[in-house]
Amino acid sequence: MKKKNGYYPDNIIVTRNLTKKFGTLCAVNQMNLSVGNEIFGILGPNGSGKTTTVLMLTTLLEPTEGTAYICGYNIQEEPRKVRESISYVPQDMAVDVRLTGRENVEMFAELYGVKNPAERSEEVLQVLELSDRADEFAKVYSGGMRRRLELAQALVHNPRVLFLDEPTVGLDVAARKKIWEHIKKLRSAGMTIFVTTHYMDEADKHCDRVAIIDHGTIRAIDTPENLKRIISKDVISVSIKGSYMGIDLPGVRFALEEDDELIFYADSGDLALPLIKDALTAGGAIVTAMSLRKPSLDDVFLHLVGTEEDNRPFNLSTFRNVTGRRG
Ligand SMILES: Nc1ncnc2c1ncn2[C@@H]1O[C@H](COP(=O)(O)OP(=O)(O)OP(=O)(O)O)[C@@H](O)[C@H]1O
Ligand SMILES: [Mg+2]
Image (cartoon, rainbow, N blue to C red; front, side):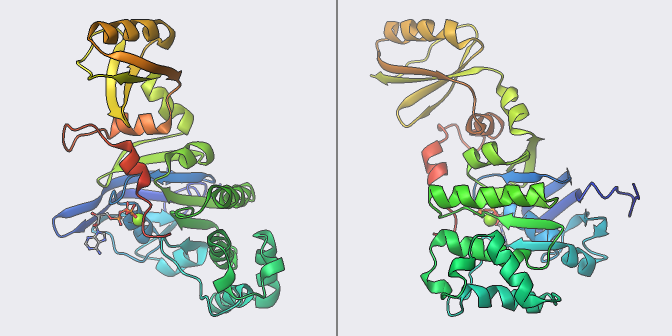
């Protein structure tokens, strides 16, 4: 394999201490990534630096420190080459609702200087299952169709790398599923997908690898499976009547209180379940329900990022309800 600028081309996206500061705020802090032909997810809460990262990688924002390579091209020295290799669907991109779906895509085809704009537009409209409705105005499209139209626009020049910032925010479950099906097909066809999300279940289900980012700093990068092994424990949820006074059991750790449920991590859930019930009952609480499950990315996120800002329980439902700028 041929090296370019010191990197093998299978390292499609490489960042070296990539950093962005806005005044005293460090939005992205010394980020080091190496992304191949995969769906690579950046998972983090609002304000954690996801969009800032994407803007730097797509040459739209100058890093304060460090650099990055896309397909071997340096983002600062060869921005034009970088832009030829990529496409970017922003977080709050909007299609032109006064044009038809087809016109929206053809406009992009012309902008990119695609050879046969009409043919290529029809092709991508077909890929995204929009050709039946392509001649209707985009204003009558559903949210999911608009998002697919944005993807069609981004794909019209056949990019090597696709950057998607929160591709499913504001969409219903069926539309989200469909978007992910398309993203997976693109990956299978050899495209590198760099996607930001704060939907942990989506990152878990659909990304090959996930970077967990918090306050601009990467806390972990791995496959969802391996990330979940960080916890390497069972998770026990308990609903009680009365207040939680604390329990002290070997192999059991209190994690957080979420939606009136107590969450514990246990080395062995089966053994811990009755012990937790007894301990809570002895403490004066009435246990109304208990369940045992394997860790999810939510748990990993809480474990890694947790509640460092203050000691109040991290409110997962608030976090989940934050739906970004779309919708
Ligand atoms: N142009 C800017 N000037 C000043 N601060 C900025 C600017 N752009 C972003 N920030 C700040 O940088 C931090 C990271 O923002 P960014 O938009 O990258 O977060 P995000 O992870 O994409 O969040 P969200 O999930 O809300 O989209 C935030 O604290 C934000 O307020
Ligand atoms: Mg963002």
